[in-house]
Each structure stands twice: as structure tokens, then as C-alpha cells.
Image (cartoon, rainbow, N blue to C red; front, top):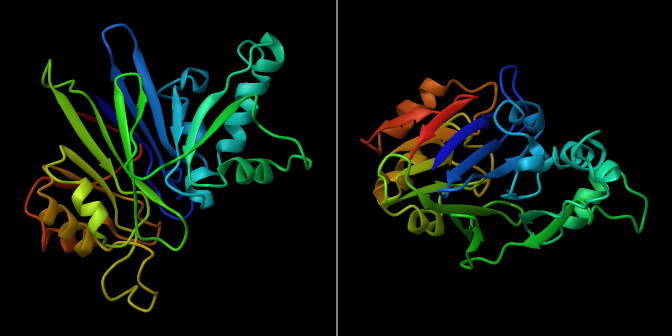
Length: 268
């Protein structure tokens, strides 16, 4: 299993990175399977460096804030109008599975500006996450869990074939956007890699109400409590210093720790 941190910027695209976009790939002995977790502003452009969007097997959305789902609009255009692979040219509807919170189908149509009654159903097969109910995409098992955010939001635990340990499985947890919560700790138990948001900083963001984002310190607390084997911090805004966030996390977590960078590749 491989993770590519396509876009790592929090809340909006940064000068050097798209907003949240993460590609998970796994080989089942016959072909590579590709799932993109979140598709935020600017993510589709950078995603094309790693996979043809027409070859995606599923999209999983943690929640419906634009920095996590805005580029569904661009992907819709790609799947519908590509001159060689688009449904308008081939006559073959794509029905790409898109997992997300309740209302994802309607939000996607509204973002693109479709007329009332129009849908994206030929291009997308919208499916609603059910906490604790896993979905299977090829060799990847994706288990959603609810997290602590002002809107309906999910993290996911992904299990798939290890690319480092033949014949074994590897695990990845993506926190989505959340503050500290027990479901994230439980999902992250002994995980091989915890991809954890850390948008806030201690002191600087204390005036903002709780339940929105983790700080580096609180992300480190999650990792330590869960016994995560490796942590990659992500979703930092352009005004944040990653070194400050890492230092906060190290107060709580002593294992392998780093800040996500756009285009980072992690073999699990």
C-alpha cells in the first residue's frame, strides 16, 4: 500500500500546495487500485502527476468543506468531457463511487451550478458513509468513523496489502478534520501510519472554539494514546510554521514524526 500526499494545505490552497488531497494505492496481484481521500481546491491538477483521474476506483470525502471536496467539480468535467475517455464521447457512463457524508450528492451539484433537477449521477455513484461499516475497494478495506468537527465529518482507517512486508497487511488512518476525540484514538490503535491534521497551534489559536482542529500537541496526544507507529502531520495553513507544530507534537509523542509535504510518497 502506498500513500501520496498530493495536497497538504489546510483550509485553502497554499502557495506551494493544493488543499487536502491524498492518494492511496494498492496492488492486488493483477492491477493497481487507486482511491483519493479528499479532493480539495487545486487537488485535481496535482493528482494528475500520479494517476489518470479516469482510472480512479473511488473517492472518499471526510466532509464537505471546500478545502476537502471542491475539486469534485473539476473531476466531473474530466469524466464527462475528456475527448478520449469522457462519457459524452464514449457513451459509457462512469458511475465513480464517491463516499461522503449525507448530502454529498446535492452539495456536489450545487458547487458545479447544475440546474434544479440535474444531477451528476452518470459520472458519480454517491454513497453515504456509515460509521463502523467498512467498504471494500479492490484490496483496500476502508472503515469510516465519526470525528469532532462543526459539520458531519469522518476519519477513515484503511487496511491493504503491505508493499514492505509481502503477504502481510498494512494500516493507514486519515483523521480528516477534527479536534481530539476518542473515536480517532481508537481507530488509530497500533496503526502503521497516522496521517493527522494539525491546523492549529497552542496559544495562537486558543481563542477559537474547541471542536474544529487539532494542534500539534493534541495530535501528538492522539498518537501516543493510540500507539501509532508513525505520524505525518498535515492540513497546516500557509501562515503556520511546521517546525512549531512538530515541536508541539514531540511533547507528547516520541515515535517517528514529520510534516506532510506535497508529493510525499509513503510505502506501508
